[in-house]
Length: 204
Image (tube, rainbow, N blue to C red):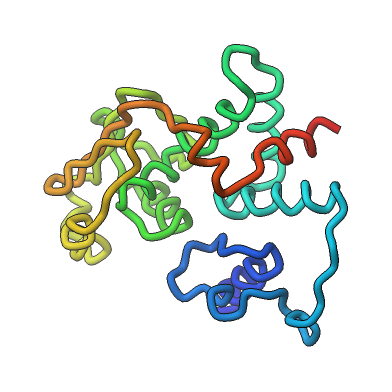
């Protein structure tokens, strides 16, 4: 486990942002690439290099394999009902593991994925154990009643009291329940990531 954590933080430093979601991410202390010359070495990125970096940032942030992420983007490109950027954001943000994280039920997306895998999450009254399960507006999510007694969730109530979910989610902090009330907005996503760069990368 320690080895995995070190590798994750090295990835954060290489990508120039924290993608592991940990409060004590090494990037926050050492915001430069790993290695002997990391602090002094600054190489300008080509257009392709910048696209690759943006793609890697988002892929690692959501904990996706390359094939998964590529399929999300290519499906967004091929559809015509909504702008490509909005379709990409919906594919990423409407995953069950991500919404579990966004509701504050887990501190990282990796932890949220484990919570879903282990059967602690109920969607519309039924247990769902597939992290990539896509939710839709109106869906309700909650922590399974039997799971709430586990040590994993003992401090969740206190944590949620100080937590504010994004505007497109509704949170019942007392009963550990949430609801998708609208689609996430691409504008919020664009503030942190260059969506057009990612789309261009996969459009080559």
